[in-house]
Amino acid sequence: MATNSASSGPGPADDLSRVLTEQQAYYQALAPEYEKHALSDSGGDELVAALDKFRPTGEVLELACGPGSWTAQLLRHADRVTAVDGSPEMLEIAAARIGGDPRVEFVHADLFAWRPPRRYDAVFFGFWISHVPLERFDSFWSMVRECLSPAGRAMFVDDAHRTPDELAYGEDSELVRRRVTDGRQFTVVKVPYSPEDLERRVADLGWDVTVTATSGPFYWGLATPIRPSE
Image 1 (cartoon, rainbow, N blue to C red):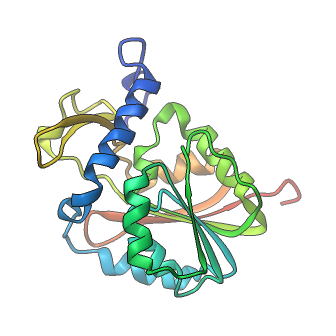
Image 2 (image 1 turned 135 degrees about the horizontal axis):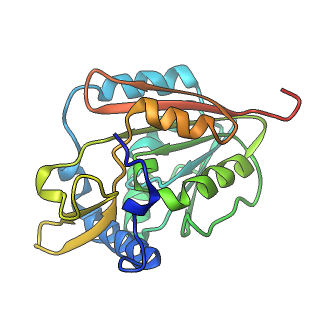
């Protein structure tokens, strides 16, 4: 379950900008070995089935595309995909995976500073919401709302998996300590939401949202902003 107080996140002793810089460095270092660290538990097929049911058609925005695993899935439905990530190394892997498909535009940007140049029919982010600090949760969802066309929809998938050896800051902290193969260690954000807690948090921001758990460690969410007339 997610921590219930923002005080468990970065404070004066753990400056948020420093943590986010270190998190970015982690994903740059992780890029060549990302697949080795992916969870192999059951439930992954359920995420793909949920995406197919969601059917992200038209102009689709993918936030935190990583190595392009979900970009390839989105292309089965979308007319065009704009895939944004903060790691050049991840984007290079994603571009190679996609094989030069002209329907994809890759954008290198800091997702905590980036703003959409236009609106999209659907927004998707895979394994990212748990890496958004609680302090930035509201502003992140405000940005997602900015990205959507009037009839736009959002989908996200993630997990709450944290190993005991990652909990260097304690179970109640949103921070964990992760290691790459060469031994380097990085502090990153990993908020262990329960589906119920995450659904409530997003709904409180004015979204019609459902979050569903898989038979394994994953969950997916579907969200549509509630318009004033609704």
